[in-house]
Image (cartoon, rainbow, N blue to C red; front, side, top):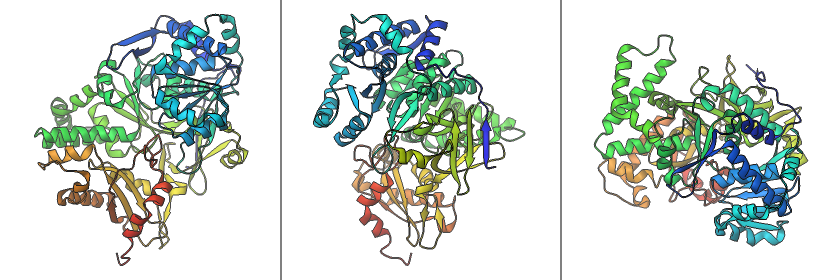
Length: 601
């Protein structure tokens, strides 16, 4: 199949904007909780009703007006994921402004580019450290004022707006229409300067109300609630921030992944959103914890049972009575503990940002957490496709969302048209014209549609490796499978114009200690682990297993374990934890060359 379209379920008035979504929630259920937040880490969750949340938004919006923010002005937000992020976001929309997110990990050079390219005039940052980064480059920008959340930014804005009339905020809330820019999100691309993606009020409003209609059971079920821990500077989390409003769900925020397990336990979400790397780490951590306690074989049998049980659910006859009994025993011994770690109420998870993999998808469904894998980009306001309850094919990224069409070009590239497709790149007509053709967005990803319209992503168009022998190889297939090993943090497959496929591998600083304990070995440094015979044997076995998924010409013939991990802080990962391939290949060129010093391989 070359093209598949899912019809729109809900029409949105083109004269409406995001403020109308919130107004509808306040009008329909003013006294139902919409947000819960903590005043301090580990503290109790403080509920805010729709009416109370709206009042706080108006108070902050008045402060923005008093500080000179005009309709259409760009308001920057640089912070970890926390309640104040969403509060300033909605307040900026209420003031008629255009919020521009910046990752809290951004360098001074990245901050300068985003602030100048988008012409931010007012900036809210989380900490004094963030402010210091901004001050390095502020003279080159048009930023008039910087407020710090940790130093009372919200209170300062509320105090400043005390004399601003309610009518002024009400007037500004009505100014934007669906076609107007709601935000400019800068892509964290793997090469070059980030491009500013202009997403409209209509992009968010039409996509979210239709996503709610298509995922009613997941995001709008009885007592639906979710805890955001992904960066709100990323479009996925931002989409969920908006989605919770028409869904009637309760939204929580946690800024520190170190407290995530504890926060999940107290917030008790019904649906969870994350990237595959987090699901991998949860699995690996549970496996190592079981092994360290002498229960490794029990965990492995339970995990295998969960996967086999889930796969059987997709067969005409379903699981046999014997398999159902085995699954029940596995649940009593192991699986229920994993559900408890997520708060005990989570039935659904939505995974995006990278391929989850068939094995993990079946494992989590066997645990009782149904993972709906989806696909999208910043340019598509996050999701374009997603698996649905009752319409799931594990290993695919699902069907197009309502109001979305997917087609596969002659060269295999995935193209998207629909309500969520961005209107263009900010101040970059050339890039816009290259990416948008007759309303179709050229994603740069390669994929295939099956006979039912389910999309499978097979690789990146620009990342396809062509060996010296002319073989085309999609590196993500190998990387995703190999990275699932508990010892391994990152994998970069190489071999472009080389005689065979190789790989650069890094050890996981969090995974190695647990693996060593589980295998009865003494603790050692990562440098020592790189040469340990048992570690090397385990990785060799993982590479061999990975190679079984591809042909001989596509298999990893040689690999090299690097002397350090590839991290976000070092600039080797994007904020969504994708590899910046060009940067890695440049900085580790000597390691790549070393793989091919003996071409007789």
